[in-house]
Image (cartoon, rainbow, N blue to C red; front, top):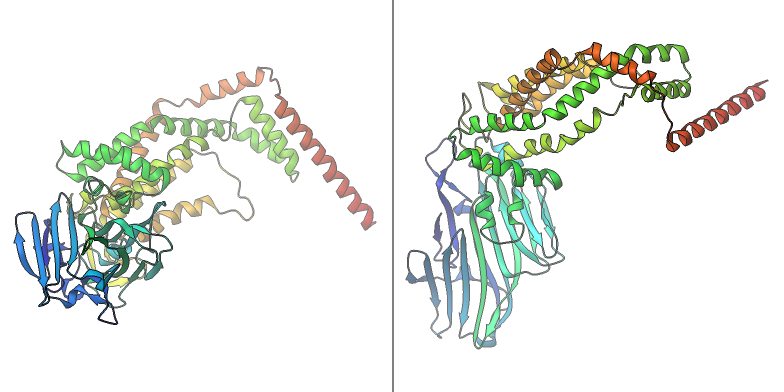
Length: 523
């Protein structure tokens, strides 16, 4: 990183990252706009009836080396204010000290930081939706203000760190003793500005240490990418969680499985697009047993469908009798109607984890694949001269292909399902099949193209798996024979089944009594 310091206050004035450039420009990524941002330290001075800020004092260079800068401000009375800034790994460790002030200043200091975020990515709206202030209260997990919206927060406990976070980059501040109760955080989204992601503001109380006649306070900064290893190197608890890989098990899957897999493949493949395709193939092969289980369950239900239809016709509107007969049929044939649901639920953490992983992974940023020039942002095969509400002013090629593959995948899936009778008040699955891919065109058009590429590849592989299973592994005649064999076997009822049937019979008797009572009243 390249950091400039202001002679007015001795604090960081700007921070740029030398290994990253703004989209479509040769300019380095800037973490904030220096002209409309400032960092100051406020303190109380007995001779003045208002808080003073270090920005009111001029600092000059006292010492400078490759990774250390000392700035000093001295007045005529010999009072000295000194900054010592040291680069250690990804951190800028800064210590401010006051010599010769005695008891003229107290121990209550505050860090005041206002910053105007700079748009560094391809899509301002997408970048803004992933920008906010993240923070961690002492003894609690990391939290954040509303992403992409104006918000504010006043801490009731001390804060361990505060991050001005944008999509792929963050400016973070911490203090060894933490920031005191009453810390105030604010985000404001400009209504008309097309170059600013968000306006950030933080007022963070901190305690100075008194040693003899000297007061000092330590403040630590991180100016850099939202990259797992770099953030973990700061040793600040949970600071890597500003990368939004998802909550609970989804984030765990991304951090402990998908990210290490991506980093491993990146050692051997230069193209991020190829890595996405390989990860997709590995995941789909790993989920093959679940896919097989789902398809086999669907095949059993399809074979059993004629008998279920016959029971429906036999019992008519008697829902209870129809349910009892259907459950008896399942028990007799050994078919579990939920057998396909449980495996499907098991793969949900993977599916949702991918939804979070690719848009949040900085390794996607600036990586091209086919017509996409940045897998971390939307791809465009056609720029429109106007903006369509909820869609945008461009046409994403990967989103179109992904939606088309979803349509064919759903048709293939529905074709392998037994026909379902339309229930009153329930949505028509055929209509959903037609509408859902169309909705995805609007939902994913502004998403990271790496995510659309993943879902496209996943759909294509799933279609291939289903066709292969149907052609070579599923034999409906054998399934029918197995069902007939199960029918011929005597079935011993479990204690639970007996109790369940007893409850159903009692319920039927109560229902019958109620109906007869109502008929008697009408007469």
